[in-house]
Amino acid sequence: MRERRILVVEDERTIADSIAVRLRAEGFMVSLAGDGPSAVETARREPPDLVVLDVMLPGFDGLEVCRRIQADRPVPVLMLTARDDENDMLVGLAVGADDYITKPFSMRELAARVHALLRRVERAQSVGPTTIRLGDLEINQAERRVSRAGAEAHLTPTEFDLLVHLAGRPRTVLPRERLLAEVWGWGDGAGTRTVDSHVKALRRKLGADLIRTVHGVGYALEVKL
Image: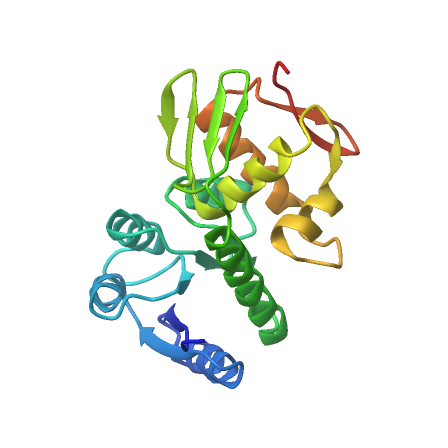
């Protein structure tokens, strides 16, 4: 298996070096960038398999970096933020981020998130040419394309995986903890707000009526069977 490359974009050198040391110990190649313009240039010169991206950067911020990198090619993005604010999370998801981790964080948690994101990408690449049609919703797994009522929606890798998971059990309520374990690969049940934020992003892109909330439990895909 080829060695996978991680691009770490962080302007605080101590944090960047700590992340790089941990990820190299996990067996990854690591490139570093300390500002927005150099991050975009590095991603073009050395295309990464995943980006660990701080929100607050000199030059231009991490949201703009994410937009520009995703415009070139889809790549999983784990965003770092010092602000545990839901609006920041939703904006990040809208421009192509797949996951958030809030500072301060442990290097163990960051490494676990990186591995989980890459496992999802590998699983997606192994999926056969299956198309799921549920009512006016069509999901092409081979091409990772989604449309509703004929209108195509651009989803991030994690949004797509979450939608496929819900579509595999239409009208069935799936608990947040189960979704975290089966889509994100997290076993401890922490981070249910991540699920909530991705569901909000799916509703915004595909329609508010597509996913039903069962308060205190989880979510169900509401389609005509």
